[in-house]
Length: 143
Image (cartoon, rainbow, N blue to C red):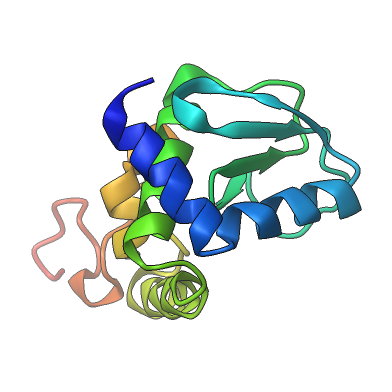
């Protein structure tokens, strides 16, 4: 495993986010297995919250699915790095604030959320929405 992923794994254990992710996976009834780049894949998560194809807590990627595409794993791996850079739990309120701002700006939770943008909107399967103040973009001169 690459040194940077080893470092991320250690940091996310020390900041207690990976243990939290493992606890969430146990409570959610997910099956855990080793994933790429030091990630832990927790498949078969039984709860419908949060509404997402997958979500990451520390180095644990949780999903209701049985497997994830390579692109989505890359996206979730970037979130694992964000947990490390945000020194753990402060990421949660920062992420929620960024999500709220994105909803206010463009009506969806990801398009203007810097965490999702830095993790790769396309890899995460998110659409790209324009800010509400841009109005129509279909060539109407009144827009």
